[in-house]
Image (cartoon, rainbow over all chains, first blue to last red; front, side, top):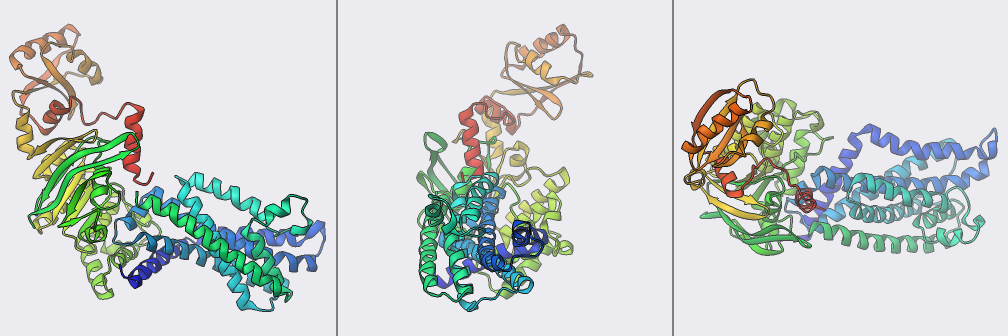
Length: 249
Length: 333
């Protein structure tokens, strides 16, 4: 199959997935409400009457990274639903390569992660007046993080035989990652051995990079971006292998 | 096209479980071929292999001249699959669903629009074309599923249990559509566990049981294969518990098989003269009254029971059979 045709197939699969997600307004609203709720709740730290300004500038980058994680992984869960509802068969029966299917599903996951994160970024900027020195680097980090989370989502979707199990598996990963990924507490302040665990999570690097951009500390951003890139490649390869095995049984 | 589908010694195993065991058959250029068997017999696994969605453990399937193991994409271009469940994107409209399928099959924008209009018209879905599919009735779902399988105008249509779960009217419409599509010159391979459907639609039938193809012929020839077998139908007056009578009658000497068919107790035997008085006496002895008794023509179901020794409605009983059935039907796991 020609590379351009394969790429177009991937694009249409991603477009179809996103069209479905955005058709369900409730789906979009619910997926954004959780990070928004977390942002407002944690902005009032330690029962203060007014939001803690210093803590907010620490919190917003973490919330943006966390939103990318939820958005991407949620979207890739569509693979499990597609498998259980039989709609995956519709694509498998068409003359579409396995690579196109995987790339398409990955694209939709990453796009959803980026869109969700941008919405939170905009809300955070408007309401709490948080600004970033270099917005293009912010978008690059969000994109890399979304792709690495999508890779994780693909692995879960490939391993889980049915949606309920996939949701449990994804929660098993997402919630510890949310609390250990430096979103609400600095990794350095965590007791041993939690910082080591945190350093194994992609969210930690996304959060760290976004905070560094916020304060203009670019030295750490490059390293974090590289780690996210390695994560992206690793999880994508593994996820693709698992999905490929299912599709070509 | 001499043969649309040629299946040779096709097998699929999941570990020690053999879902399909060395089956061979062909579907001729313009015929409707029915693969008949109970749930879990291996029908869905067979068609998944034919459609290039499942890799055979051994054997070959040549579709429109292309080996599915060597050229799966060429095969997929020539086949339209109507799966046993209507697997459409529920949030999206019929038009968007068809648009997506058209794109996957490489149709350009103009052709897509023309074909979509054509199939929406043909399947009476034009009025509701922009409604999300999740609000459609079962019959509409089924019609749209067939429409989606036809969007690329395939040479061969593969239909897995096409009328499963439909009411009588919707099922009749789907059968009429199937016959019309065949008249247009399309080869149709359909699977069904409904004997009357195979009898009504298929020009040739293959009976599949536990992964083996146990008969392959025209429905008439298969019926005749129940050679020397006679069928007797009785109706017991005011009887609700027919199963009780089935177990009573099955104990009579000379009775080969007893089952329920269209509200009547159907008895298969090689010797009618022996079983008629025996059955009448037995019913009388157990306090029943025969409302109606008649000798019937052997049907495809009689032949099926004669061949397999069981009714097609029986569910698999062992855990192994259950697992096999799940594997075959889920397709992915």
